[in-house]
Image (cartoon, rainbow, N blue to C red; front, side, top):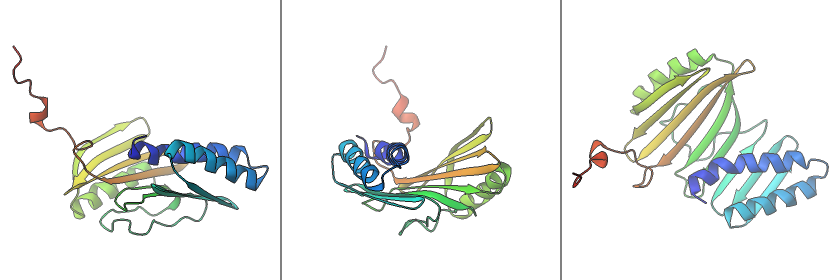
Length: 184
């Protein structure tokens, strides 16, 4: 499974198993570990405590719940809007992160903050756009990419920050990549 896809899908898989099997903590932890091990081809350690879940695998760590902090090593040049962090994912390489939070600020307030903070922190916005009650940015800085998703639901604004090191596989296409040499 592609590492980036695994980082994004792991929270969905885990939430379905852990909260679906909440009748017995040890059974739900074991079931979650088995599911995650199968999906990541490795070992998984799952800890369910109160309203929080922590998962460590050989490729990433993931935490979700009520009292989540920014992951250790989260880049200081990425602005994090004021709010409650609900999910944090870190790759074992320490170069890939996903943080999801809820803010009481409106979508327009959050968007205005990111319009300013991205530029202040040296990020280049390569693409941005709005659809219904959501807004997204695709940005880059040196050898890193940052994707920001902002949406409104149930009176809260949800912000998801995904940052990763660019590689030849996930780097944006350049105009030269789209030439059709030799055609004709």
